[in-house]
Image (cartoon, rainbow, N blue to C red; front, side, top):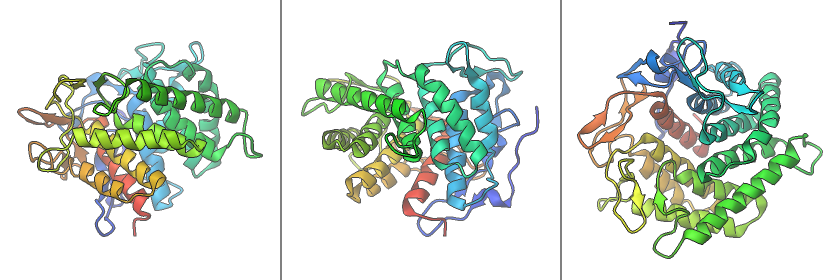
Length: 372
């Protein structure tokens, strides 16, 4: 195995009062000079499954957030490694990104899923918005602009939501109709507007008083749909979008609230069908992170600090306030277990789960303002 990035005493930032520790150790142990490995066997990288662009996009966002928080021009997480993985994943022949790569660095497809395209655009938008050096920002900008045509034909609502988040971050740096704009600004704004309207239409067409959702089945990464409506509605001056995002996020929290008040995530072994019952297991860390991030966005957009309390309640799912009363965070490694099954926690600490936990921690720190 090529060099793996190792942790040092600087890779665990002591928490501000009331905030969780930022622990980078497992992300670093899961990263080599190519990128972040996709899966783990317990806390060890599982080389059989290689890498994927989904996880390296998430890792890039985590690296950018961490660098932004600590004010370090040489970030502890190797964000350039993650960005170059995304760059290498771009396929000029298809105009999209490959997703899966084997351990021997062979791409396993010509183009990845729409979700992986949307998540990659999201990460590139964050890089354009928040990178601390010109080279990183300019490379992300070039790749973002090249990728725009390939992400303009999404059908799935989640793919559109991921793209909206990236488009919003891009437009923070390069607003349309301003002197700061680039050749990507106008098409980015147009695509953001179109996808946001698509989301709103889906919510209004499918929703009712007792089913405030945009589809007839609540599945994965659901809070990202509300999150995208919130940030797009806020920047577009669309109070109807913001109101729908808040309303549906509140409903999503309510259907996942246990009688005792803790977060009880919709399981992926059946999801939540309209008119049916919520699947109890398997519960995924991805869902807790999406809720944390969306609730903090709701607090920023709506101004109601009660959303921050909701974000913390969702975060505590990771630390034991869940249906099994077990912690998913592994303090001995800094990783996060892969979910809650009916028989207990899945002890593998893969990239998606570990990054879900780390990003939740970073976003709480970002919301509360500093590491001090």
